[in-house]
Image (cartoon, rainbow, N blue to C red; front, side):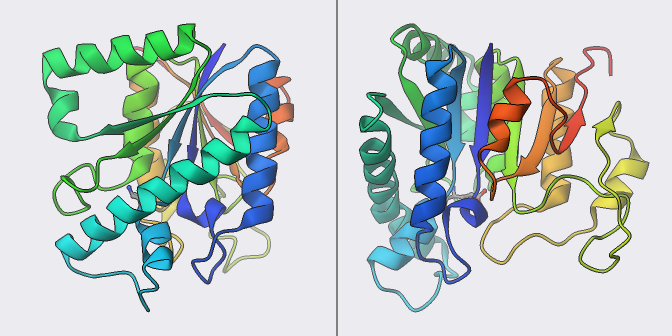
Amino acid sequence: MRIVVKVGTSTLAHATGQLNIRRIERLCRVIADVKNSGVEVVMVSSGAIGMGVGKLSLSQRPSDVPGKQAASAVGQCELMYVYDKEFEQYHHVVAQMLLTSYEIENDDCRCNIENTLQRLMDYRVLPIVNENDTVATEELGIGENDTLSAIVATLAKADLLVILSDIDGLYDSDPHQNPQAKLIPLVREITPEIFALAGGAGSKLGTGGMETKLRAGLVANRAGIPMVIMNGRQPELLYDLMEGKPVGTRFEGRKDV
Ligand code: GLU
């Protein structure tokens, strides 16, 4: 079993933008344990720009491209430092992989990425992937890690893509507006009607929203990879997911769509 777990800034940071230490500790502990149980894990993690903003003591996220790129260059080190420190306690080795759409679209580069991922899996390493924001920011590249995580799932030939979000999954109406909104446990096909449920809003910190997650679902599902959107505030739910229990919203992978 090989899974790709996408972690967004809303899972890693408080609303203040500062690191959510308790959440990161819990998340890394669960992922380390899931790996110990024999599951191969690749993480796709955001947070570089956010951490850079914190480390540089900027009062807000820069709005210009060089500002975001500089913040991400600072923050990516910090991000990997935190992950390395967390996973080291459980004797897991992490690897950093920074990708851009340019390399993913280039056949030779894509082949190298796939080979590297495979070798890291053979070495039982935990690859942690992010977009290489110093050469590709929102304006220039893939721009958000939901899509990147679906691409990584296909490159890694994963069995499952798990997107950790700040809500439990996809609802039949907006749960922030409608207290009667019901979680949809299973989506067999991502149709325009499903997109209509997504609305536009995401959190203030992250780049994506439900819509980018559904687009990621299309990419993964087309490659035959199921996707699950679940709440990153409860990383322990990953255990339930690995035991086959229903968690969040599952989007079935169908090779023929
Ligand atoms: N690559 C960006 C970062 O690490 C995040 C993109 C996203 O939020 O999806 O800060």
